[in-house]
Length: 101
Image (cartoon, rainbow, N blue to C red; front, side):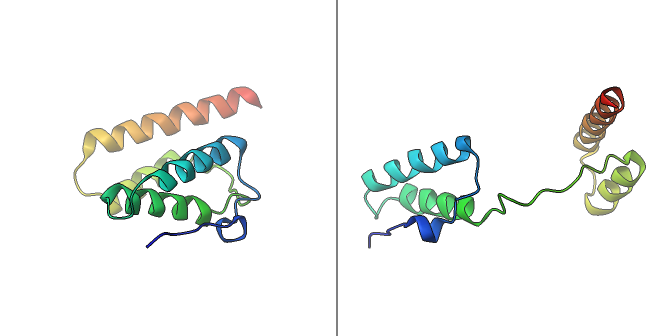
């Protein structure tokens, strides 16, 4: 079975140039892969995922460290090193945004 992607189906009109380059590269790769290979399904799924992302939607950053810590502790058991690293990253982002103001 060969899957065809059309520009209409992919809905990438609002994605960045970088994302468009990735999609084109993956489409080229997909055309070369036999459909029986596991990589074919992975590549097809990746392209479909990229086409479903809301490229034109964005949100403002919420850099509330206390709320982030509560959310991480509530939703992720253990993983203390990872949670600490995420909080460090958010703290740096918060400092950078304060400097830019």
